[in-house]
Length: 454
Image (tube, rainbow, N blue to C red; front, side, top):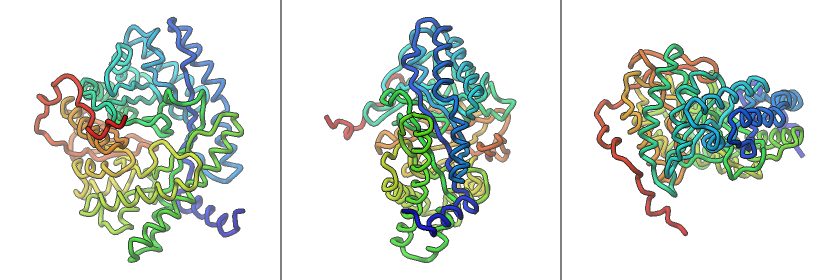
C-alpha cells in the first residue's frame, strides 16, 4: 500500500523538484529485416518500427496523464546498423540511405531521437562496420533525429586503436559538415567502452543482439529531488548523507518501475530495465553539479569532487537497485557539461577542467559528455582523449564514453549553442601537446590481466 504521505511527497517531487521520467525507449530488433536488397531492407525496417512503435508517443502521453508524472521523451533504439546493413550496404551512401529511413520513421511515429546507427568494434572492424563508421558524418549532417554510437573497447577484448583513430577523424568531419549549427552533429555521436546493450539514453542507445525482439526500457531522472533531500542533511555525518541519497534514489526508481510496467502492459512489449541515472537538464534546479555543491563543494572541480561523485553514484545504485526488479543501462550520475547549468558555471568560474572531468569519469555513470572544444582541435588529439577515456573503462570494468564537440570556427572563451535538452556550452581548452605518433600505431591495446576469468 502507498500511504497518503508518500503520494504527497511524490507530487512535491514532480511539481517543485523536476522529477520526471526522462525517457521511455522502445528497443527493437531489426535482425529479421536483413536483406541483400537495400530497398527491400529499408522497407522492412520502416514497417517493423511503425508496427511496434506506432503508439509509443501516444502511450507515453497517456501514462503521463494517468499518473501525473511528466514523461519527457519517447525514443527508439534498434539493432546496430553496422550489423543490419552488412548484406546490402556496399558503399557509405548505402548506410546514409538507411539513416534517412530511420530519420523518416522517427518523424512518422513522433519520437525525438532514434538510436542504433552504431557499430560494435571493440576487437576488430568488419568491412560493413568500417563503412558505417565512415558514413557517420554524412548521416548525421543529413538527418535530424538519428543518433550514432561506436563501441571501440571492452574489458574483455582491449581497445581497438584503429577504430579509435578513425573515430577521431569522423568526429572532426561531422563537426565540419554541421558547422553552421555549432557542429551539433557531434552532439548525436558518442564513442563507448563497455557499451551496455540496454541503455535507454541518447546518443548511445542501441538494441543489443543479446536483447529480445522488442523491449521497453525507462530512464528516470531526479537530480533536483536528490538536491532538495540533501538540504535536510547539511552538516550531518556521512552515514546520514548516504542514507538520504539511498532513500531518495529508491523513491525515484519506484516511479520508473511503475511507468515501465504500465508502458509494457499498454504496448504489449516486455519490460526490459529501469536505468536509474541522475541525468541533468539545463533547467535551474535540475543539476548534478548542485548536488555536489550541496554535499559540500564550492564548485564541481574543487578538491574532493571525485570522492563526492563516487559517494553519490554508489548510493544512487544501492538505493535504486532495491526499487526495481531489473536495473540496467548506465545507472548512476551523468556529468555532461552543456546539459547541466551547474557544470557550465563551474567551467566559467575556472574550477572545472577537462583533466578534472576525466578524473571524475573514473567514478561517474558515463564519461566525458557534451564537452565543447576548439574547432581546430586535431583528429589525433580527439583520438588520444578517446583512448584515455576508453582505458579508464577497460581497466575499471565500467562503461565510459566520449561525446566531444569540436565547434568549428570557435575557440576558448566563446560559447556553443545547441538548444533544447542539449543546452549550451563554453568552449573548454584542450592540451595542445601532440599524441600523433601514439595514435598512429596500428592494432589493438590488449585486454588487462584481470579480464581473463574463464
